[in-house]
Length: 353
Image 1 (cartoon, helix red, strand yellow):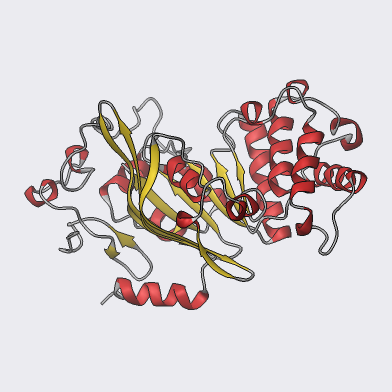
Image 2: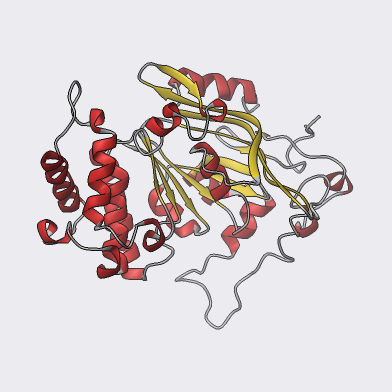
């Protein structure tokens, strides 16, 4: 018999997760109606772990991560749940912090950093890339030097060193470049340097390879793997590409319409997926050894309109294995194997209250 959810949570708690998200809900109140972008998501991130979060575009991955950083823009807001982050002096619930308050500003960028999808939009075009990283280092200088503030010269030297660490050639010159003077690959490397500039304990990479070519993508993934091993930084890696997850993550969370459909170790998810949505995602991956001139399988249907959310299991209108109960009740995430959880009535009968 697989362990109960409580047993799994006790085991994870014993390891003391760096980040614990519980029943997180984020809603956007619009004139047309209420959009539940994140609808009861729960997961843990351990120190030094690379957690992959995967799902189609519009599944709530990025909104979940912006909620962790208290960066959800109005009219969106966190309506329920806890985001517990373990700091040196204890555990703090990020969901309860004021988004613009001093405590959240100290954590955001300092202890939790973000690599956004579009570095061109993230960097200011009127200041050099180096100036922007130097300002971040000075703002969080205690992360580098306890007891005294860093000088601008010291912060510049750190920035040059970070550029060198992320593989930017001629770092002494490139630190004085503007973002629009750099190639897409160099901008992404500079953004990674910015994210690492305050020695974060958790790095959130939001589809960091989406806007770059395949060759540069491989280089950036190799760089992130190397930096994660060197700095022992935990990473949440968000993507719609399961191939990238296979390269980067040790544990994966599969999301659909703001809910976790399945989670588990990467090898288990890839070799024995339990949820029909995970199975459909895996079937859609091209194979080097597959038949030529054969159409790739696609997931039937499309994501429902945000204001027309289906009742019951959110995936049931597109699920080939849907039963009558799937449209009437929401399945709870429950153990379906030794290390996997799935929200699916094919494997258990537990429903949300």
